[in-house]
Length: 51
Length: 328
Image (cartoon, rainbow over all chains, first blue to last red; front, side, top):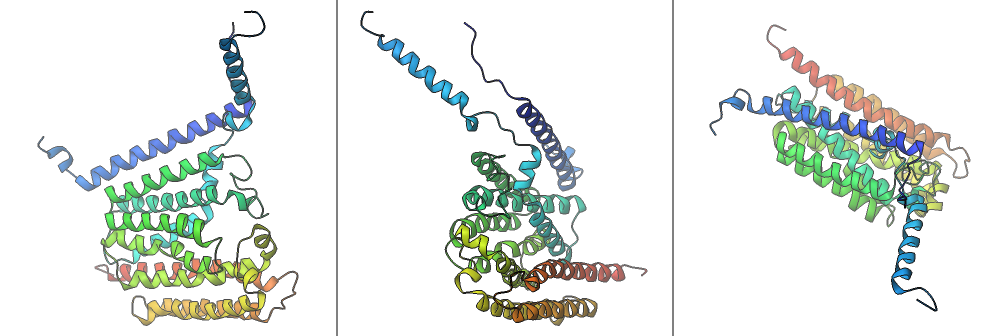
């Protein structure tokens, strides 16, 4: 028996792709902010810390 | 089994029916919302004002801030303000549906589901406050958290539907950004950003009541107790004029207190005179005026006023700093 699944419409697929790209860009920007601010806040100490 | 279906068969059919119903229910399907719809939830036009006034607060502070830290702070404040806008649109979807001005918003138009707007607002609220706290300053982050709470809970959920003083008290939420900007730079709050807070706080009633005058029908239909719908048009016109005079006076206060130079004082006085002039036109407007052009003019001018006053403040600070540089 073939399993009945939800079949997204063309509009839904396009919207999902649009959202996915936006989420990827937002996450990328957030990673960049965390990276740059870490360097600015810690400066050279970022590699001089004793673990 | 003779004489009908077994219990197992009945249960299977019942489950199949439930699943079919779920599949046919469009609200349970995949979302058709685009990134643009979610961006609209952040109220970008309000956000631009928040970004600008917070930036002026940050630049007015007598402490130099690393540009990357400043960008992070402004970004966090902008996202926090946007998050409170999303929470507002989630809660107000029922009344937004009744007004022409707001019916096209993502939730009432059905493009974004209420649950999505709520989750979006909550996630961004936490993210913006945590980012500001961890990377910039915890006092600023606390003020941002309070601002989001004040706008989403105190104003949207409580005041907006219960009192004509809704935008008077709720205006505090929109007035906080310069204080947050100042706190990101200094880690403290002093009288100077409080004066900037006062300018926005006192500017809010004449700005929104001018809108409420020519949108009174819509607000009435939605059952929102705006001042013209509760106290009447004549009383609102008088209150607008009174607040406008106070805004014009408070606008020059930073110069009187010596925070900025005479250049700012002259610009703020001229802009304030314009504000009082347009408010005077509103005061003279007939109650039965069907077009309410003076109210529309005041609404447009009030936006220009706030941007111009803060731009003049910023320019004064930048020029003062440039002249103080060695060799100038």
